[in-house]
Image (cartoon, rainbow over all chains, first blue to last red):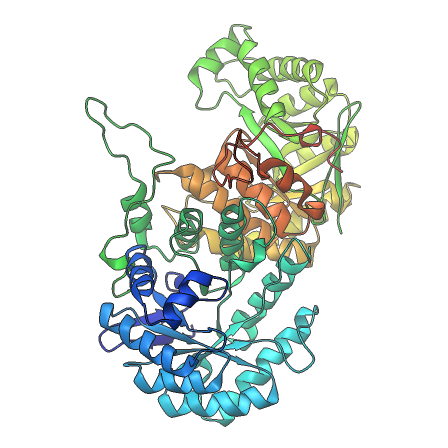
Length: 308
Length: 308
């Protein structure tokens, strides 16, 4: 089993097919959040602080940190945000930017082994990002598109992922430090999007033997009850081989689907976490009442803890 | 794509990988339902009538009918139950018994092309049940165990399924009329039960090219929030290749997971059913309120209709 280790100064999280699924909290990201973008540009990080605490309490295993604010000094803001978040939690971070200088600034201040989000199969990106990943001993998200765009053919996307893994190896980055994102399209726009990704995920696990991740909120774009689609998608992707996702840990439907997915993949030992969360709580004067739709409890210490 | 057709006198349901997932309602079954068993033995079928209507209204595509009552005349009761259910609905039926004479009695009165539930890989069962299936032109559920029991090795269970398909062919029963049940164990007792079944399901679809079914309520035996496990299991199994399940269509968590699974497999065209069920209902004085946890609506006519 391929195991990817991401760490802060004092905590490590292991991503792998025989481990509980890893949720990478997506909230610290000003893209599409005008208020957060304005606040961060003005030096007000109070919302970042709240998003950090809330996601950690909801059981996020890693936090993605993005500071993509138009016309702002993204490297400086990203570095400052990372330092702030690391002062609040020891949950390890994913450093997220499309600007190489911002990734470099983030890596320079990060304490631990970060996840760099991301590199693509584009030649220029590969030769800019991979040396940074190697320099800091980080892991990296590899997105399976290249100069020709995103192929609708799952075998082409698999081939792009394979090429990134090979190129990373040329830079001295081992296979276990590459986490492939097979790129999930909105299912409302492309009805084959789900099947494509399930197929790629199986090949990533069985043939390329790498871990995988996915932005799991995009799939439901344009549809009602997005949480219902997102949670079900994650469970289906877990069965196909997905080992982590960048998503919203506060969405109850997503959390429950991932918890059930861990049970069904045999990665919630003795179903202990599931039972702890959903077991019958005897009410006053009433023994053994069935509680099927109980609100999920705040996770126990292992939800934000050593993750086995 | 392998397509299995099951029909009543006036309606056909098609099971296949490119079709909406088929839910076989499990409720008409006195096993573990003492009251229903006592009523059926005494000739009171009012609960069977209610279970029929409720499951059809909840969107069941087929109904399983079982009359397994200890020390009763099961062939006569099964035949009577089938005639009753067919007088109430044109949803096609699965005739469910472990007694060959009961299957024969049920088939003798059934109008349409029934699903026979079930045959195993045991020599004696094969030679008793397959001639009946051939005689009535029915389809059959093939359970992947044999004289040696249920193997924990998915490859052994696949081999048993393959042998049943071959034997059926010897009897003149085509591959598309065999629906394999890979046998799902409770996940609480066997943590590898999910992975085993996901693996077999992929081989059934890709190698043996048959449809599949599963009793999908057993997996959560002994756990709290069973509906949460059952629904997530079904979605994961759909991604792996499962095309039908014997389960409770009245369980909301199961219905929602199957509906989302159909969207994500590209089998809910334009996500039309999902959108119809969950779209925003503008409340009084309030435009566009998000309704994420709305109770599922009664299905539209196609829920119990021609099923494409």
